[in-house]
Image 1: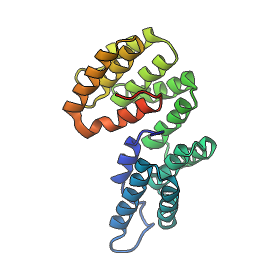
Image 2: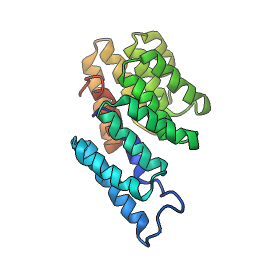
Image 3: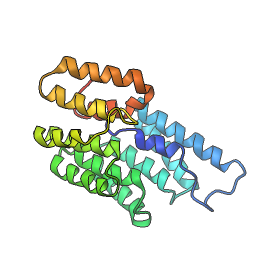
Image 4: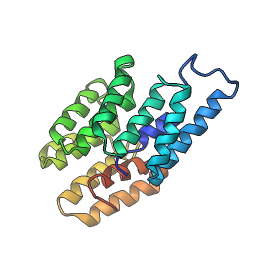
Length: 213
């Protein structure tokens, strides 16, 4: 799917920027528009996604959640320069906005610059060392860079079973790299049985490297 949709899920619950919308039902309108963009991204209709996100930004041009949607669409279109500029614009006014920071690391990962992506996600972990998503991404960077020993060190620090599918998918990624495909499939299947739709983000991340279970 190009870029994991977790950030899009975060967006769907993000409040509108204060003072930007004045209609009585403005928040609901933004919610509906956001959901339309997410559906467009998921279905691969990027032209519709672009149109809908631009419409969303007309009402709230500085809303970080809406801008992050724009950056996600740009990333899906592989316009990484534009996406990077969009995410950096968000962080210039709100340095703590997690989705934009995460997406900057995703761009590096999609560009196959795994050492830089790892450094980015590891820097994010400095402020939140137990974040399971960031642990998973560091493991993925290590595996893609061919550093299985480093991946194992991160895996040893991950909590089992955790609050997300991260432990299962991180171990599945390593098992698959080592040629243990059957074990990787079992781990993914178990994660889906336990976490249901929460595995979509991790399936998306696998798909970016051509891995499907």
